[in-house]
Structure formats: structure tokens, C-alpha cells
Length: 253
Length: 253
Image (tube, rainbow over all chains, first blue to last red):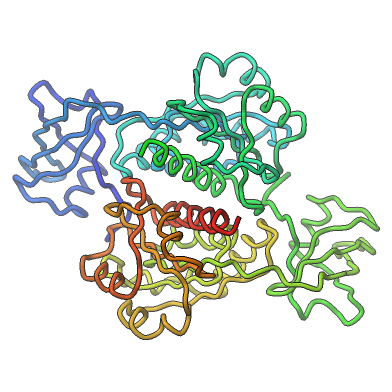
């Protein structure tokens, strides 16, 4: 039975021995045996977290263990050229979002406070690496990527925007979704010229306040239109990141 | 506490009396009292399922009940111009998808079988109107829409495509997402000319088979490119529908 789509098995660097052998156990071994139903000498797609993709050749299936001989590519996959700054959604929505963000492809995930974010959202275990790292890896394995997004949590939007952002995202084009704006994502990116990266801000479900909008606008965030339908944070993130990736891909074509 | 974003309260036609009065009870009354925190004479956005939007004036807050005097617009909101045909995803993913599809805006949802869909997915309660109708209404209330998508379930792709589809979606432009395709969604829609509607096909997580792809291609489905990242069905649906809505909006602009 298909329980989850794993299109590439991700390994941790320390799991790969000097002899290029890996012994999979647990859930990954189970997936390889029961879903991929591999036989000895068969090849499967593998990768190292934040490292290269590669090919694993099945050497042995021993009880619950799977032994692979690994060969890796010389180049790392490119880091996704889009970063996302999200007003922290409620925990249930955030939990759904981790794997989707990693699957769509983002370099950085900046979670920020905003006036219309409830304070207690910051106390959830959903923001601990123990919770989100496996979910990010799930998304990467789905999308055949290895590059784990950087995650940072910012309790003060003003400090993030005024002080931290300059250094951390460099010369990225900055976009903010706004139902009142007229420029499309594609036209705003064209107007911004040839920035290598793009940082997209997604507001809380209740929207940014006027103060927050002005703050972001005065720090280079260009308003881009979204259709005038209010979307849940996770749906809005997926929609906006899709438009940005599409526009950047077409801009390079 | 914000538990869910309700931007418009949807009423059933039979709830609105000839005197234009509505008595809300239960979860909607609780939302109006505790989240919107309305006072008498305050206005809230309302709508009738598959009917017009309107304004409700709070007449009274009596115990757990809220009485509204309703005024409705003369025009119905336009039915979304995009329909979606989805190879049935696993129940957990499908359950997440209902509200998101209604929020993004689709006229019809056609759920179909495919070679890489597990047969038992069709037996889930997630496909009963008792399960999906409240989820669709949740999405509509989020997006301030009233138009409930039509839902139909098709156990035979071939019968759907060869026999049923001609009548049911008329002259819609037909698109199918394909990582190998070169045309973007926007260029495919431009090339198709001025169709009023668009039907988009989203495959199973394992992809369509060659047979299915040929079948769909020979019935007018034009392949459009998606970035070469495999996405979960719900993420893929949101991404593809976003691109189609954006391209159709730009085409009309």
C-alpha cells in the first residue's frame, strides 16, 4: 500500500561509511522493502541531507535491514532561489506546511510575529527541530531534493526587518502579497531586474496591519496582487511560492 | 482565540425566512459572538449557499442565539471558471484538499480512478457528502464565496473521458500537468484562444501511465509543464490551480 511518496531516500552524512556502504533500518528500510519492493542489485535514488544526490545499489536484504552501496554525484543540487517569510500560522496549519514548503523548494523559512498572530502560537512544539526536521525531510524526499531549508523564528517583525534582514537575505527581490496591489508576481519580478533570489512575505490570515504594511514597504517589499480570495495560510503560501517559482523559471528561460 | 478564518457566514436557503430574518445557533452563532464579537446593529458578511452574498444586521444576541436581518445582493457571484479532475488521492490527503479546492475556487471537482490509485481509496467516508460538504463550505466561508463546487466520482477514467466529459464540461480548454512538457500554463491557455472555462487534470502521486496520458492527449488535454519536483497531490492541485487562475485572470486583463 502506498502510504507516502518517497522518491528519493535521504541519508544523514554520518550514516555513509568510508566504504560507501549504508545500512538502512527502521522506517526507511521498511519503505525500501515493502513499497519499492527492491531486489538485490537493484538501484534506488538516494541523497545526503544538504549533500549530493546519488544511486544506491541494493547489496543485501537481511531481516529488517537493507544494505546499499552508494555512489554520489559530484555536484550538489542548487539551493532553491526563493525564501519565504511567514507570519506564524496556528500550529495545526504550520504543521501541515513544513513538508509542503520543503517540497515546493525554499532556501529559508523565516517565521515572524505580527499583530494578528496569537502569542501562544510561538509556544507550540511544532516549532521545535524535533518536530519540523522530519517533516522537512519528508517534503525533500517527495520532491527529490536534498537541500534542507534554513529555519529561523523571529518574535519581533520590526527587528527582523530593520536589522536582521539586510545581512541574512542579501540582495533578494522582496515581494509581499496584497489583494489591493496591481502588479502581478511576474511583472514585479521583471521590473526588479535580475536578482538571483526572491524573498516573499505571507501575512497572517487576518492580514497585515497598516503599520506592518508600511514597515515592509519602506524596506523594499513590493506589493504584488493575488486574486481577491482570502486563503488559509498554508494554501496562500503554496499559491504564492508557485507563482514566484514559475515567474523566476520563465525569467531565466 | 482565532480557530478558523470565517470571512463570510454561509446560510442555507431554507434558513432565511420570508421576513428576511435568520436565527443562527450552534457553531456559527458561537463564531459570531466569540470571534467576531458583534454588538446589536453591527453588520456582518453573509451569503446563501449557491446564492447571493449579502449583509446581516445583528438584531439580537439571546443566550446562544444570534438573530440577523438579512439583505442580499441581486447578483450571484460568478461560478469559478476552472474545473479540476483529480486522480483520487489517499483519504488523508483528499480530506485536506476539500476546503482548499473550495477556497481557491473551482466549478467542478471530478475525482477519477487511475492505474496508480489504490482501489480502497474509493471506499472512504471522505467521499461522502456528509464529510465533504461541510469542508467545502469551510473553504467558501474562508474565501467569501457562495458557489459550492459540483462533486462527482468516476471509477472508470476511460468512460469519463470518452463518454461523460463532452457533455459535462462543454468547450473548456483541457490541460494536463506533465513534468516533460515545454508549454507553460499561460502559453497553453493563450494558444487555446478564448475558452470561457478550463479543465485541469491532476495525476496520482505515482503519475499517469503512458496509456492514460495517451487517452487524455487524444481527448484534447494539452500537456503543460510543471517544475520537475514531484509534489503531494494536495500541493500539486493548489499549485496548478493557482497557475491556471493567474493565467486566466491575466488573459482577461
